[in-house]
Length: 451
Image 1: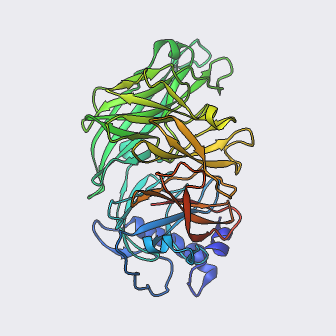
Image 2 (image 1 turned 90 degrees about the vertical axis):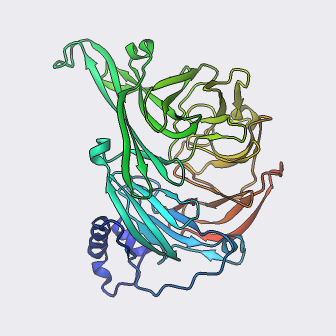
Image 3 (image 1 turned 90 degrees about the horizontal axis):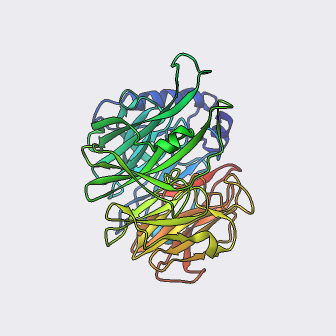
C-alpha cells in the first residue's frame, strides 16, 4: 500500500522518500486533536484555490485505493455545476485529502455538505471534518469508541443531521460444559451493542447491550445473528437489517447458511430498549447490506427493505410488520438472470429508486459484473440501465439526490467513468445524462460514492 500511495497519491513534500513517516505523524496529529481545535491535516502544501461560486451545497467525491483488504480513502469537494459539466475532469492523481482508515472509511456528510463524518473501521474511532474547499479539510474532533462498543470494528449509520448510531454483534458458542468444547453444543449466543452518537460533539449518549431475541428452533440448529446494520427510524423505533450464520458443531466451523425467512431487529429510539424482531417467510436472505443504505421510508411512512443475500428482491414493512399483502418484489425474475443486490440501494422518491445489482451468472461480488437497476417499488417494475461500463460496486457507499435526480460517481475499476445523473421520471434504460469525467488513475482504485 505504501508503494501505491507514493505512485498514485503523491503529494508535494520535498522529501518524498519521507512520505510514509510524515503521513504517519500527520495521522497521529489528527487523532490527537483537541476538542473543537481546527487545523488542516492535508498532506498537500499546494496553496488552496478559491472555491467556484455555486448556488448549491458542496458535495464530495470519494475514492478507495483497493478493492480488497486494507484500502486508503481520499476525498475532494466539488460543486454541482462542476458535476454537471461534461468538459470537467476529476482526478485523484496527486490530489485529494486522505481520510484515515484501517480499512475503507465509512463516510457521511452533514445535510449542508460542510461537514464530513468518518468511522475508521478497524481503527476504533469516529472523526468530524470541516470542509474548506477543494482538497482542504480540517479535522475538528475525534472520539475513540472502542471502550463503549467493545471492538475496533463496529459499523455505523447517520440517523439525521444531529445523531448517528453505532452497532455491533458479538457471538459466543455455548456448550453443556462451559470449559469443554468437546461437550455437547447447546447454542450460539449473540449479543447486540448499540450506541447513539451526538454528531455536534462526537460524544456517545445512550448505549445498550442485550441478547439478540433468538428463535429457539434456529438456535438449537446453530443458526444465529452475527451482524446488524443500516437502521431506519419509523414511529419512534429503529429497524435494523439482520444477517445470520450457521455454526456446524460437528466441524467446529461456520457452515453454509441457508435462509428460510427474513428478519429485522426492532428497538425503541432513542432509549434503545424493548428489543424484539419481525420476520417473514415470503422471502429468504439477509437484510443488513454492506456499506450502503438498505431500507428506506417512503412518503407514506412505509419502509421498503432490500434483501441483500440470495435473490435480489424488496420487502415492505408497514405498521411494524412485514406486509403480507405486498408480498415480495422479485427483481431477479424481472431481470431474467440470477441476480443479487448485496450492498444496498438508493431511494429518490415517489416509489422510484436505483439498485446496484450483481449478475451472479457472470461472476461473484469480486467481479466487475454489476448493473444499475431502476426500480418502482409501488408497481414492482425493474429496468436495467444502459451503463457502458464494467462496474464493480461491492464497496459503493453513497449517491446524492440533487434537484430530484440521482447523481452517482461511476467508473470502471481502475478505469474512467462519469458522473451519471439519473432521471426518475424516465422509464427508459437510457434515462440519464452524463456530466463530468472521472479518472481513477490506477488499476485497483474505484469511486465509492458522491456524498
